[in-house]
Length: 476
Image (cartoon, rainbow, N blue to C red):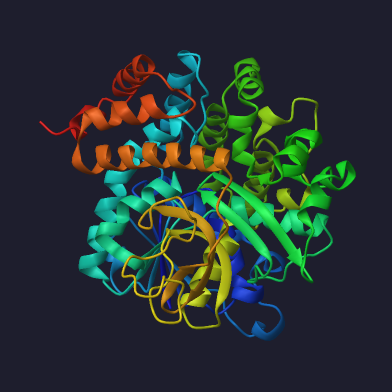
């Protein structure tokens, strides 16, 4: 199978190669094509892959011990990269890390949360990214119409929703945040989940905005006891982000990105107190690192891995204001690429898998599905949200694609927030796909972390100054 990575010079590409070269995913891909518009980044990442030691990926393990690592090819030609592709994995960042700095700073300069995917920064990121991803999807439809697109390009939910009219069920959005939360919470509750299974798990939300609401084992929901146990909550990342009494009263376990909603003032204050934004930190790291990687020879992998660990240590640093350290399991890496490759393996027919994914909120309408008898209207997996909206829920993945599993109705407060953010997402998608500037102003204005028409207009004007090409998106 041939896998093409759009954004092949990306910092985390070696994680994908490492997973493909050993262990459960070895032998899944015979050729890996790395596409990027930046030749220097491609050279640097190719050097890291060449220097990867066998213990980290050069030799397969277990039943796949005779499998060979995939052959690697790099190209700056999108048609060449797509030709013959069976799967496309997209993780692009238009504007690079310099663009991320602007996404964060424009919001912070107006006294608002400056974060890459949440709030104003996420809307700006989507407005720049959706047109580029639409171009990729249209090229796929022409050059490799049978290929699946596994989308990790952020903001993943909005980007996936924008691509549905072009690719239909052939696009699946992924994120490691929700799945990581579920597995960490399950371990803390004493019911570790096997890979590829979510039996007894209840989770509903949008990308970077979701809640774990059930952990059932043997007919008993273990989540209430977990939320009442400060010691158990203290053993994993999400359990430490929020005060235990708050979690007990809430009755569900929030995704880590809900820190920006539930602890908004703390997050904003911590960000203002930092010497540099997260984007600035990553930009400076990569600006220094990439030229070194390209000429480092056998040392390239060691340099990259040290930088990766440093980057993981700084993730969500604004929530760790008392010197707390991230768990060693988180620092080891291996989140998003495992989700992506598990999806790819299931699509390739190696066995169904259950994963939390970004997919239309639409239960199957066949006689064995969950559609109301006599009704032709698809039932939503998350009650209260439109059936055609992209949501983040447990799904079963097979060669036919990803099918969401039915979830319980969110509580009133969660449903209100989900509906509000989904409205913002759809305004953003319309603005980026149809060039409607008024929709862009509306998206900024309506976001719960902005909630002001005046600030919405100021934000868009600020981003138009920061990104001179942005006004060219607007119709007329």
